[in-house]
Structures are given as structure tokens and as C-alpha cells.
Length: 372
Image (cartoon, rainbow, N blue to C red):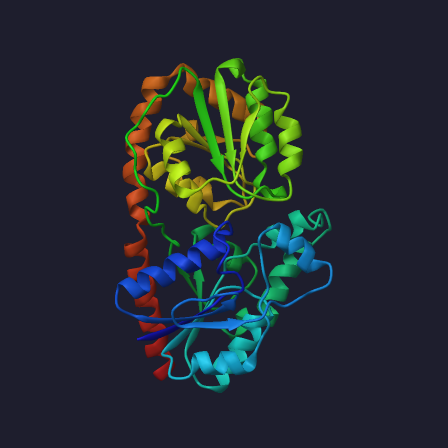
């Protein structure tokens, strides 16, 4: 089977969609399938490179979010699609929109993935308080691309439910993006007497790392906590300023895989504050390393599906409630360790190989349906 993956952002591994696309391509190739990738900036095996598309004002903002847009180069798309069995489109932008039209013209089966929530756009463009803006974006995505897809890959049940609410008529196929244990697992290693709390991810509006900083400030054990908020993004300086109010500040900035593996070896608690997430691979990585999480119960975040009980959830946007949950686990270390063992096994259900097997079944179904 020859599979073509079309995605605007592939090379920047700090972007969740890029990580998911890379993981999919890696595992498909490992399983013996030929995979071509259409994206900007790639220099890879079976790479079909397109130029970056410049959009005035938008590109400047998107670069801060580590996001690129690909030019819809028809020649490159047609070359990549030639002889393909199926095409997998990741995002609802110009590269994919034109790609869908070409796939239809060439009579090649295709599926579309839904990896971008409207809130990802409105939070960062400061538009989320405009009435009906999210409904409009769901409609726009459907009108421009998803109405042509008979199969839509949904990384979580939350997004499938949202698409049903907004009258998407395709077959909505829920398959986790899955994760691969890319981090070298290190033995637990208590390096000091502090309680270490970690969160990873982009420093953007919807991720709400500010809540975690405030929750630590409010904790009655604030002087016993070392806070690690690792990532990249436009709010880094703002977070440094907020964290300066803490006794020990916060450990901010980009971290390599080896450094993150070491950090996880002595992390006591992982916190995920994001208001918006289709699926958090970062949280899966943390719990697979035996770290108990506290997760926002936001209605627009699917990450709460990983929580084993209410002790591991806090009210979205509520720093006081998060602070109480942190204090509870500091006071109940044995329970924390007991949960960490359970979480390590939970993560196995989202193993990348298993999830990609389900994706392959979806490809085969879409191809059979197209031929029929």
C-alpha cells in the first residue's frame, strides 16, 4: 500500500500535529508501508517538499506558535499522488483543500483528519468572545474541505461529538494518535527533598500555564515545590515574570528528549492545565513514565479522558481548586505512588503500534468503499 500524508507542519516537533504526523509516518514505514509526505521544509525519504505559504499578519502569529502553512503546489501534489492507494489529509488549510480536489480528479481514495479545534485559532487571535465564532469556524471547515470527505479521523471522542453537533455527515472514526515511548525510561531517582511538578507544551494562550504558576503560589507548601514548565512559545517572558513571585521561580525553556527523561525520573506530579486539546500526547508520555497527572476538566479538552478519578481532575480555569489538588497529593504521597503504577498501565492502551493498526484498517475500509 502506498500512502500519502499531506500536512502543513511536519518538521517542528514542538507542534502537536507535527508530532502526530511524524509518529504515524514512522510507524507505517516500520510496518512495511511506503509513505510519501507532502509538507514544507522536509528533506526526508519520499519527501515532496512545497514552499511555505506566506499569509500577511497570520504567518507572523503562526510562527510564534511553531506552525507553518504549505503552498498548494499542484505539480508537487500530483506527483506525490501518482500511483498512491490513499491520501491522508491532516489539516483544513489551502494545501489540503487543493489536495482534496486533485485526489478527486485523479480518483484516489482519501481521508481527512480533524486535528485543529476552532478554539486553537480564537484563543491565540483573541477572538473567542465573539458570539458564534466557533460555530462559524466549524461551518467554514466543513464547507471548505470536510464535506468532501466520507471518512474523518477523530483523535478523540470529544472531537467526534463536536463534529456531530455541527452536522458533519462523514463517518467519524475515533482513533487515538497514539504515542511511542521516545523517551529513554529512567529509574525513579529522588534528587532532593523538594516536591517536583512538571508540565510540558507550547507557551500559548489556550495552554494556561499561568494557572499552574498561580496554583503553586497559592499552595500552603509553596516553599517545598520546584516547578518545571518546559516548552517554547510567545508567552515565555510573561511566564518568567509570573514565576518570579514564587520562592524558587520556575524552570522554563526548551528541553531535549534526554533532559526530559531525566526530569521525569524525579517528577512527583504532572499537571495539564490546557483549556483546549483534541488529545495531549505530552500527558500520555508523562503517565507512561509512571507520573500521576492532575488534568483540567475543560469541556473543550479531551485530555480529561485519561484521569482515573476525580482526585486527578480540577475545575477548568480555577487556580484555587488546582492548588487544593496539589496540596492533597503532597499530603498523600503513598496514594500518589499507588496511582502512578496504575497510570503507567493505562498509557499502554494508547500504544502507537496498536493505534496505527487501527488506522491501517481505516485506510483499507476507505479504499474498499471507494472501489465499491
